[in-house]
Amino acid sequence: SSVTIPPPACMLRPLEVPLRYLFGPGPSNVPPRILAAGSRPIIGHLHPEMYEIMNDIKKGIQYAFQTENNMTIAMSGSGHAAMECAVFNTVEPGESVLIAINGIWGERVAEIAERMGKRLRTGLRTLNKYTTLIPIHKPVLFFLTHGESSAGLCHPVDGIGDICRKHDCLFLVDTVASLGAAPIFMDKQNIDILYSGSQKALNAPPGTAPISFNDRACHKMFNRKTKPVSYLFDMTHLSNYWGCDGKPARVYHHTGPVSGFFALRESLAILAERGLEESWKKHKEVAAYLYRGLEDLGLKLFVPERDLRLPSVTTIAIPEGYDWREMLTYIMKHHHMEMTGGLGPSIGMVMRIGLMGYNCEKTNADMALHALADALKNCKKSKP
Ligand code: GLV
Image (tube, rainbow, N blue to C red):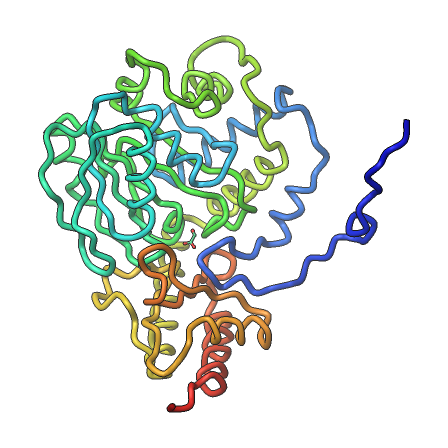
């Protein structure tokens, strides 16, 4: 019998990928060293050499998170996978969760929790300020986004873990957009569950996500009455796959993204070589330089309070008399540069510039400012 569907013409053409300055909220440009690590020959996901690499990744994450938690792994999936893993494993039917919404990520967790039939309460919906919380009866989990990429906000974390402890509630923090760019201390800040993503300040390709659970979180998730709704994200299996469950052998659960783990290991190695303090300092300095340049262009920053700004992703209020989509299209076309609009609740309110990790340099800030100045000159709407 012969095939009736011929090979598609597009598949007979070579892959084309343009070179771009990724100055949006992620993925960021991947440095050659990490790209090279990702292109090393594949080995089996259950080979002993792979276990060694996974053990290294665990150590690298422990450093990046500033934690000694044994239950520290990387998800096979984006930051979103880590978000779902955290909620699926720690919350059971009938329990309540409390969610601070200061941008899209709180909205996401609320939606995930709602789909699981959770009773939930959300904080006041503020985009560019502190979140104020509404009281709720005995939540088992409190979610906060540290690096809110949709709003460009870096939310303070100090003291919140202590309050959660007092109320026997787990403190879950999202650092997808802030890890490596703004200080976070998982153990010292009493954060029970912390996760991040590979594709922002870590500069690895998208597709893997560090996550860590402390003993309080492990106690809750391994003493459940019901199984988590997801098999893939079940920490009983993932903890074995990552050699965190004390069992002598790792058994097959799923096939992890081997190349993605190579790249993630390299990105964590670069962070370790460079040092967290140095990386935080650099992000702060370059962000301050960018703020000055933006203000010189007559642009307004969306987050008024400087200390609350996320150093990795800067949000600019859309200037009057401009169509933000047109500006971003112009910048992509003429400068081969990605900047983005808002996301979720900030759509139509902001444009976003991300200078993360490898991309976090004053020379790149200059290029971004030059592109914006050009767009401001050429995209102004004529008065009707
Ligand atoms: C994605 O993480 C974004 O902030 O756009």
